[in-house]
Image 1 (tube, rainbow, N blue to C red):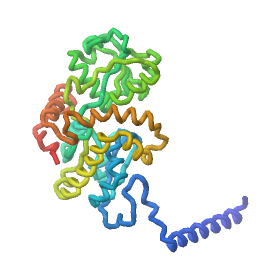
Image 2: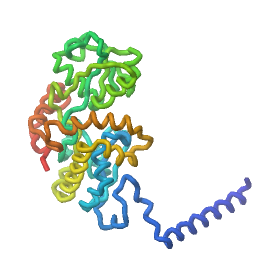
Image 3: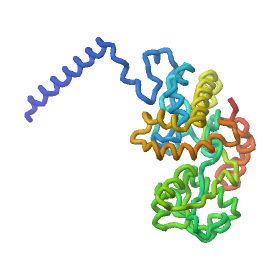
Image 4: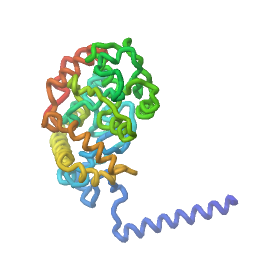
Length: 339
């Protein structure tokens, strides 16, 4: 195509686009920024815009947020909430940089982030996962019957990072073992394939995920869950101290609305899956329901959804110090609150 021809076509397309835009305005079309990830509606102008960095990809594990959005709990609380997904190496850092109002991260992540950046002022305002969901998974017919039996065996993990690595360190400590006693192998997020092919003797994964996938493939397993040995603080809603202090009403409103969604998920997982479909592209609803049912006990814990447990925070800090992942914390009580 000649240069003149290309210019003519381009001008024609621009004209059509402008005409289309004028027609949409004339017909009163809704704002295109209203997506399934925001509260939506023409009344958004009167709502406070906030965001939460959920990390990872859209997934059924975030159902409490999706349900709160779908049922209008955020909108009723005066909030227009945007969910920011995507695998980020420093999720808490995105909040500290002002890219997110809140993030969904674990207590150990918060403590490690604070240790690396002493100027970070952040607080966990509600723990959504009441149980640390990481487990070491072994074949059911394995000779590994206890944590101590892991000695000399190969354990596959995604890599030396994140909750899975923290979890394997916690379970080794609980079994009175050290890294020198086992062979840790980085296998990426391929735990199921590695176990099915017997490339490793055990894998580290999530109690509500990999065991279900393996058993779906006819592979029976036994799990050693971190929460059965150590009360580490798992994922919760974290915000900056500045936001908590100067926008307290917004923080309370967001937490309360999310906890309403959480209680609905616990009460009716099937309905929660149905409502979450709009947020999770390509969702297999049967598998999602299976995962969500396995996640409900993690949400519930000891029957106090959203609660920040002092003993769990103290245990988490003590463990991280013992593993030389952080220095002793002298202001631990300022790292969390109960709404």
